[in-house]
Image (cartoon, rainbow, N blue to C red):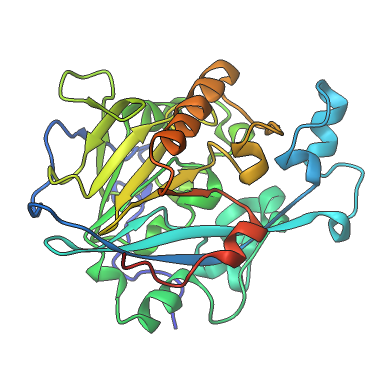
Length: 319
């Protein structure tokens, strides 16, 4: 199996010799395909493993020395924590298959550095036959079948496999797109522009627009298909435009927290992450997520990278 989509075109290759960046078109109304009363079937997918010191996931002190330790300087990879890198396949009755995040690129199976670079490459791995494309095909879904990919944010482990979905529409927060495409040193902030610098179809949502509405405790959400089945809840802080995703099951909500909380302890406020774009916004977003669970106690709140939580998830949610 080829690990690269043959029709993929990098934006910089689209105009050889010219520095070209992909662009995102503002999305100001719901996408087509909504069905009144629609609910989803959701399948969590583990696209690989991420390996970092424990202090990367749960901050242990501040300052440059603690930062170096959190990024693995002075420690052996054998002592690092291994955590899942998820994506979520959702089946919509009118739109078809959609994804939340892409997970890791299939090329990570053989050469992580090809997609993630020299430094980050050592922090990720994917087992043979367990890459995102193989998992989708095992469920009867080809990459070309994915109509929409919702991106919680553009950090390296969430945007890694954008390349293999050239026919999909990618949706994300406008502030996330602006940050990821304008930083002078994006790699220092967890972004790899080569992962999303393609002439693909990107749509961005301005969560300060008048078409944005509240939903439960969330102050800013966007109803993606206009039928309440997929709501993007603006939860900035971990990254400039981080977005959590509320997927409606027949009897409850399946909430992709994303990296607004790496694990359940963090969701409960017991730990804090090392990496935050804006600590104030992160705390405010976490409070909204916590309030949502109090308001809707039957909702399934799924943190970003929690091995124990992941092992308890069902392979398929239909109710």
